[in-house]
Structures are given as C-alpha cells and as structure tokens.
Image (cartoon, rainbow, N blue to C red; front, side, top):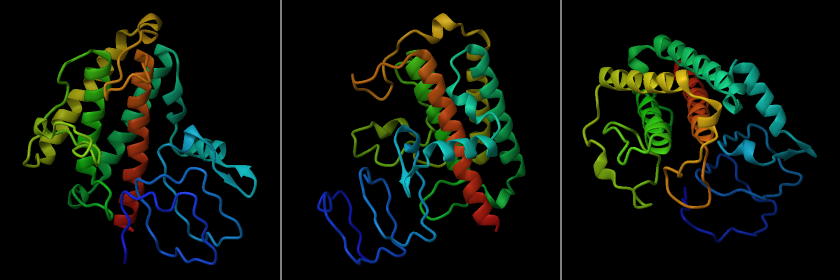
Length: 244
C-alpha cells in the first residue's frame, strides 16, 4: 500500500468515484475539504483542533454537539475553559480524579501496550509530564530549561529542530514515570492553590516559541487542562480496544 508523506500534490484536487476505503490519514491538513454523495460508514475522525473550527455534516455544524457530548462523558471537562481561579482549581481536581481512576484500573500488562501508532499509557503519562513542564515551568514560571529527561515529546519535534538531547535515551520504568508524574501534578495543584485573577491575566511568552501568540497565565493553565482531558480520552479509547 502506497504512503504519501510531506506532499501538497493533492491540494485543490478533485476525486470522483475514487475509493479511499481503509485509508489512514495522520498529521495532515484536511481543512476546506468538500465531500458530496460519499459513503462515510465507519469514518473515524479524531482531531485535537476540532473545536477551533467547524465540521459540517449534512448542513449541520456538529462541533458544538461533539463538545457537549464529550462534556457529558467526562464530567468536569467543561471547566477546561474556566476563567476564574476557582473554576480552574475545580477543573484540575476533576481531571486528576478521572486520571487516578484510569491509572488504577489499567492492568499491568497493558501499561506499555498501544494501538497502531498511538501512545501507550506509560508514554501518555510521560507526555503529560512534558506538557506540565512546557506550560507551567516554562510558560508560566519562565524556567530556562523546564523539561524533565523522561518527558515524551510530540512526533516530528526533532525535524522541527528541537534539542532532543534533553531527553534520556533509555525508557524509564513505570514506577519512575508515576513518581515524576505525581511531582508535576502537585506542582499544578500548589500553583492553583494561590493563583489570583490578576496573575491569570498576566501575559507570558509562548513556551514553544513564535511571536504570533502571547498567552496569559490563564491560557497556559487552560492548555494544561486541555492536554489532560484530550489524552485521557485517547488512552481510554485505546484501552477499551485493547481490552475488547
């Protein structure tokens, strides 16, 4: 089966009576794609950026419907958009309780198991360590090199010029992952315990660079919450498949 990577040859193209059955699309730009009279039975879309735009199905923008259903499935998820210290604290408590349940209920033999090219539970927890480091230690607190050596960075970071020497080559044990994860969780808890509306409104530099966006402290906290809820959904989805 052919693989197309890093190509723009399909931009603006028209496909008529073409079969994409069983195809996989990853890390690609599908914005503005128009589909008419298509068979979408079993079409599975997963987009972290879904809530920043529209997805129109049969004339209906389904993004608000998906957002509402996810809030129903994950009580407290709606607080990832909270603007007050109290709301952010409540949202953090909710997502950490949900994570505690997932970690406790995962059989040891599935900790390193994964579906296709997705991350395992162990890798996911390492990524959340990195997310906390980036947005709390780096973005909010301004630590020059905020990353723990066992953090799991996103795919393609090396190609973007990120210094991968920060991270340890040999994989950590699950016990070490849980210990560092607990430390990072406590850092967020401690920060939110005393944060004020005035501090939430202060601007910071984007920890991933660039001058197009200067997040507030509140924005940085909300990114942490979004990361926590999104990856909880991913890993629960994959664990259900692995156990099913």
